[in-house]
Length: 272
Image 1 (cartoon, rainbow, N blue to C red):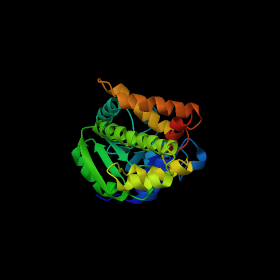
Image 2: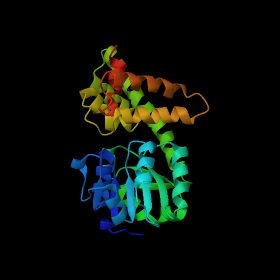
Image 3: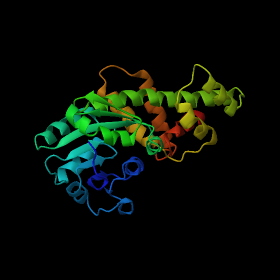
């Protein structure tokens, strides 16, 4: 199903929300920061004008607050891209369904920069029929989309993928610091890593940023720390590597890199 651009809106016009607007041509977007708002003075204006509303917010608590204060019409489709609490997102889906509102927790594997280029995977939980209605819209956003199951399952899958992604990033940071400790040229080390069995795509997106200490945010370090805390709280078994990762990210925050790109985790390893 194709939705007219003037019937698509966004709540949360940060890095992800701005990229969603670029990809979909959404007609309006609202943010707490008035300078980011596009053709909308209030959140309700977005909800009232649109058939589909994307939520691009920091965490599930804010999602619930926004939705609890919004006037929502029946048959509205809410697409929540937030990396949030799976249990909370499942509960929101159930509550909204009782009001005739469709909810997909459509999490995104990839940074805002990758989303702006359409190079992401969408992992969506919710009714299969609603997912199919939005398939063309997801095709505008990324290279692939997968229906993961009921509401909350998209968030679960995002935590799984972010766990591995984040550890890849931390491993690359430690490897580059180790190379420097051994007197190995960083650029050569990165080149060899890319050619070796150690390769991961994170080397292409974060390698140069780490070497050049270019921490212009594509995805903020504090946001990934929030994700790691969600992983640890959602698991009934120990996640030892993620626990170490949490400590590294908390150290980076203390060093002042919370609002920097998540590649700044290298500072937590390189600084005493």
